[in-house]
Length: 238
Image 1 (spheres, rainbow, N blue to C red):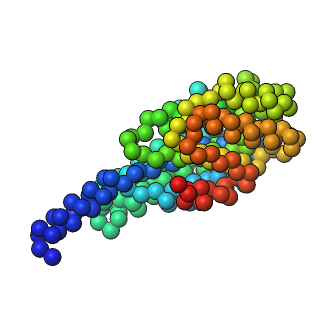
Image 2 (cartoon, rainbow, N blue to C red; image 1 turned 90 degrees about the vertical axis):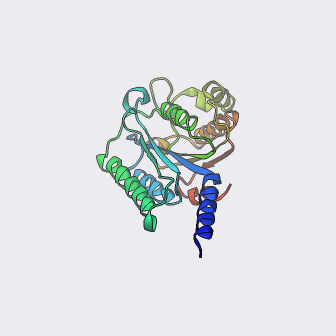
Image 3 (tube, one colour; image 1 turned 60 degrees about the horizontal axis):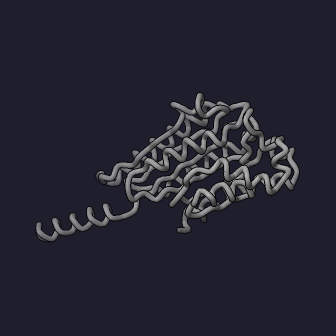
């Protein structure tokens, strides 16, 4: 192959790479005391596994659900971006995966949990991150939680509003954020609080989140009762 053909091939590869849509995975993971240790471990493992689907130029963000997002989330959000420049023998991708594994493991090993669950606060953080992505980035949001906001403002597991299906949906309207062009996966994980509430309240909570993301104009919404079980299929589907 002569030098001209090599140059043309190189330019073509660079062009095709630049035109490809980049991916951004944003994981919101529940670190509240209510979530069982086993559920947390499975959530971390699902992030490891999902991150393997990311490539050059892609992004991974992990937002912990703390007890008070305004005061406890700052400095604890993980953000990792893969290089768009290929290195010999794909060393760049190996470095990306190594950084992901190290940072996830550090968060996991800290074993820090919180008495309250500021899910709304964590979603506000995730929303800000989603809306500040580079151009031409396909964003997927993964919420791995028992989906029960539990703060002094509102407690899904106790407040009377979640006994009323209509009022539950009306509440979603007051909490809405703009999730336009974002694919959303909510995986309900095992927790102590979730075990205590009635089947009807669980259904109202599920419908709340369906409505919350629907009125926020999310591109695609999946509320999974089996937690992380459907993430692989969700990522494959466009």
